[in-house]
Amino acid sequence: MARISIDLKNGDLANQASETIIGIDLGTTNSLVAYVIEGKAVAVKDNKNNKTLVPSILHLKEESGFVVGAEAHEMLVTDPANTIYSVKRLLGKSYHDLESVQTILGYEVIDDGSESLVKIKVRNKFYTPTELSAEILKALKIRVEAELGSTVSKAVITVPAYFNDAQRQATRDAGKLAGLDVLRIINEPTAASLAYGLGQKDEQIIAVYDLGGGTFDISILQIQDGVFEVLATNGDTFLGGDDFDRLIVDFWRKEYQLSDSKIFSGKSAGQRLRLLAEKAKKHFSSENTFQSNLDGTEFMLTKQQFEQLITPLVDKTIDCCRQALSDAKLETKDIQHIVMVGGSTRVDFVKQRVGAFFKKTVYDNIDPDEVVALGAAIQADILAGNQKDVLLLDITPLSLGIETMGGLMDTIIPRNTKVPSKAGRQYTTSIDGQKNLKIAVFQGERDLVTNNRKLGEFVLRNIPPMPAGLPKIEVQFIINADGILKVKAKELRSGTEQAIDIKPTYGISEEDMGRMLLDSIQNASSDMAARAILEAKNEANHILLSTDKFLEQNDSVLSDLEIEEIRSLQSNLKSASDGNDKDLINSAIQQLNDYSAPIAHKVMDLVIRKAMKGQKV
Ligand code: AMP
Image (tube, rainbow, N blue to C red; front, side, top):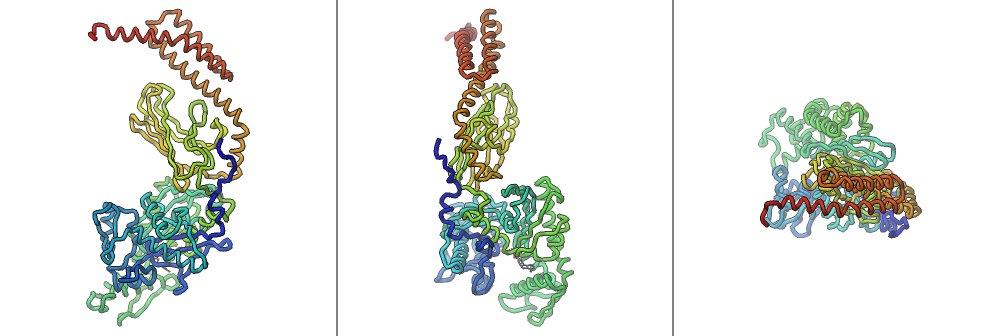
């Protein structure tokens, strides 16, 4: 057997625990960077404006390259053509995915014909969303390095739970371009839950309600032994606090009969009115009425009017929550906690409505703008090895496989395989007409599955009836960079398939793993003997079944003596395989084979001759 020492825990990372690993929330509207210091997660402030939020906006200057954040935000009004926002909406997207997005963006998204992923044209040059996201990440990296006074090179970056592989990969690539080794991509709702310390306790189900500036997401997560599983997501990619502002603006335009010519002159008129609306909205976190003069017009709004205006939008988010619950086959009573994320969850009315729907008080005492980045920083700290009780691995610590005939472990991904990794093997059925096949997934080094750890199982159904041994069932194990194992089974002739996702590190401590490895070494010789017996029994079983079939089909051509002798050798094998003497079983197999093989040949010849009768060759 290969290495046995248990130096498995993030070998290369542990050595560099002194380097701070940062957590990044790369948002559609705003981004943030955070890190853990003395056990506490903190978001990094900009020393110019003392804010933790960095607007996810880029402006390309004529000569000096990109500026990011607040400075670029200002250019949104004065030089919109060279200012890019919401680039996250384009990450990992091809031109086919784009129609709905392109219409809302003020800059030029083009198809230069060279490849299928979108590009953005700024000052006659083409940039991919990945390159632009990298610019935002670089700005965050510079910000945190200035605060720490040292360089950083490793990060955890968050993405929405619904991001597909292409979008996750694009985020990873952006990190790489920014000079960051992205140790892990984690889901935003998972990060938010980590920030609230959810995940260490017993099994629980939580809802993460994320209402930002332009998007809404609801995620239902199941947490078990520190492992987060997304049960359902729902949302609206074009619903957020910016829509609240728009509704206020529309209301005022009607209320004060403002036409564009009557109110404000100049390019930024609409923008200024929108900013006033946003101010009014934020005002209602502490006050009940808003009043302000802008260019001679007195703008007024009450909190009640505001709540009336936004009711249809808040209703829409509640509908999404209802749908997510139904997709997860859950009811509101199954949800233990509700975590609030995103600036727009500061709106009292939103909190009340969400709390009323789930019939629980929501978690809102961490800044909803920072909560995701803080959670990412906590995940980073775990990876740095600073949180000892949490296990995270970059290689498979134990072998992964499935149960085959007789309870034997058939390893598909051996231990110490670097993740991500993919492996597969073909299997078949052992009974004629078998319609269902149970795939039971195990982890461990022992030969018998009963001594290993069961991770899960599923049934591949609707295999078309075929003789035993004919179906070709391909079982694939795919373990991704985040340690999630996907097991897929497919019957190749009919195409029927089934899959499950498993987290192999789920609820297993390093100590348990060490013990499992030690057990496998101590029991190696008895395991080998047990495997040999089981393999002999499997073989005996197979031969007994096929001999039965042979007798049944060839009853008319066999002599009574032959039938009697075969039956006696069969019964001999049967009683041997009831015992545990491998040699006895193998010798009984041999005897049956020796006697029946020549008879089988003879029968075969007879059948062929019969078939050829009357045919010219
Ligand atoms: P995010 O995308 O999570 O950064 O959220 C930004 C959104 O939160 C914007 O629409 C802001 O106007 C909104 N927001 C920030 N603070 C408040 C507040 N106190 N009350 C209402 N909305 C707010």
